[in-house]
Image 1 (cartoon, rainbow, N blue to C red):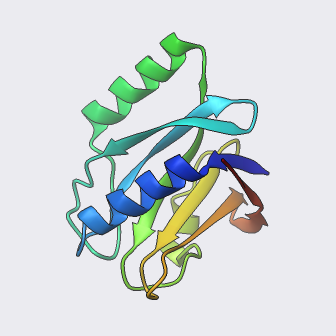
Image 2 (cartoon, rainbow, N blue to C red):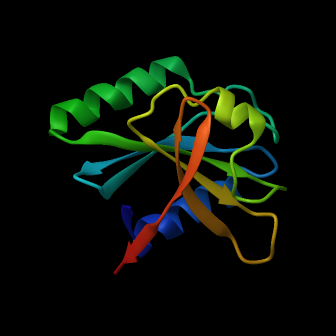
Length: 132
């Protein structure tokens, strides 16, 4: 289970909307399974179908998170026009079996968010507990 505050959920939805028509991406960090921070990264692909982190930003965030004593809990990205489920490419590129993969969908009128664990090509939906 991934625990995320409503405030961070709202920030993720806002990031996804702000990035339209492209996918947005970033990291979620925290302690245990509770997300305490989100980091917006640049999608250097500038695509509505896929994303790639800016490597310099990615390493800067990893250093900052380690320095704070937290860990990267998840990477996230948006699907501007498709449901919140991993695409074939998302599954193929899910290299870290220790983190969660959070997907924000803007395909419907009300944004959707889901989390997944992806290990060796196998996808398992993960519950998100939203706290105040």
